Length: 302
Ligand SMILES: Cc1cc2nc3c(=O)[nH]c(=O)nc-3n(C[C@H](O)[C@H](O)[C@H](O)COP(=O)(O)O)c2cc1C
Image 1 (cartoon, rainbow, N blue to C red):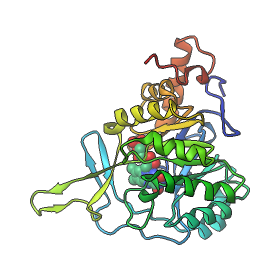
Image 2: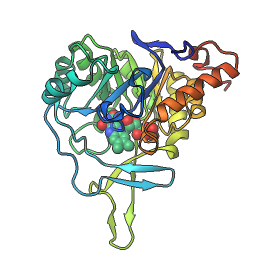
Image 3: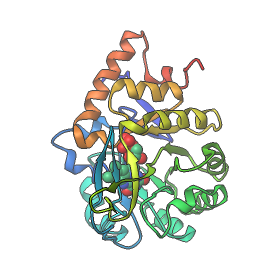
Image 4: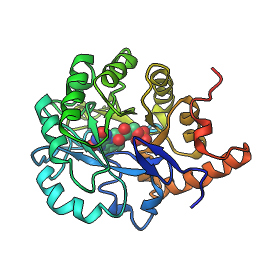
C-alpha cells in the first residue's frame, strides 16, 4: 500500500485517512465485496445504544435535491448483542470505531465502559442525532452538556474518544472548545442538518418522524465551513464529513483543516466510493508533488 495516504490519528495507525461514516456502512462487513476494509482508516459502525432500538415508524428516508433526508431513529441491536455477536466477527477486518448514543450523561459513561474491550479502536459519541426524541441532539447543542458527556466517556474508557458535533447550532466552535476542554481526543463533524419535506397531496410530512437529517452533496459547503471554523478554534484532530463524494471534495476538507475524512451518503450511491477517493487522492498528491496527505492539512490560504 502506498505511503502517500498513511497517517496516524489518536494513536491509531491508518492506511488511509478515509473513514466510512456511521449509519451509512452497516457494520462494515456488508461492504466487504465492494471495499478493501483494511484500506479504510476505519468504519464508524451504526450507532449503538444500551438497549436495542426498533427505530422510527413509517417512511425513514426520502431523496432531496443533491442529498437525502433520513429519520432512522437509531435502530440497532443494543450493546450486549454488539459485543457478543457482531464485534467478534468484524474486529480483525477493520479499525472498528463504535458510534454510541445515550439518553443521559450516565448512558454515555456506561457505553464507553462496556466498549473498553479488545477490537474497539475508538469510541465516537453521537451527541448530535436529530432523529430521536429522547436524547442525542440535546447534548450536542449545549456546550455544558456536550462537555459532561465527553468527560463521562473519557473517565470510563482507555480508548480514544471522538465527539461527533451537530451542525444544528449557532456557533459550533463553542461546542467544539467545550468538548476539547473536557478531554475529547478528536472531533468529527458534521452530523446531519435538520430538515423536512411535505407531501402536497396528503398534506402530511413525508417522514414518519416529521423531521429528518439532511445529508449528501447539498450539505458539503456547510460542513466545510464548520470544519474550517473548528480547525481554527481547537488543537485536537478533526474528522471531516458532510457531502464528500470525490477526492476533490475530500481534498477541500483536508485543506480546511481535517486530518481525516468520512463518506456517508455517497456510499449508498456507489458502495466502492471510498476506494475511488483513495486512488484519486493519491494521484492528486502526486500531481502536487506532495509526499504525504499530512502536508495538505489546514493549508487553505484563507
Ligand atoms: C441513513 C443515515 C443514517 C445515519 N446514522 C447515523 C448514526 O447512527 N450515528 C451518527 O453519528 N450519524 C449518523 N448519520 C450521519 C452520518 O454519519 C454523517 O455524519 C452525515 O450523513 C453527513 O455525511 P454525508 O453527507 O457524507 O452523508 C447517518 C446518516 C444517514 C444518511
